[in-house]
Length: 60
Image (tube, rainbow, N blue to C red):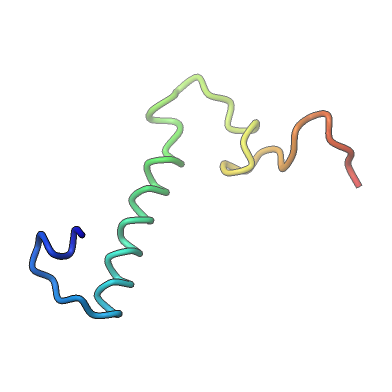
């Protein structure tokens, strides 16, 4: 595990903090669409504030 590589004690609080940083980094990388894909249409993804389902799904 990554915590072992940096000699961080295996404690639930340390694990929670490490996982929070890990997932925050992943989320920032995934949601940084403008920098990675300048021609991407952000309105087509529910993760960037766009559609919540495909254009063919029924709306209520």
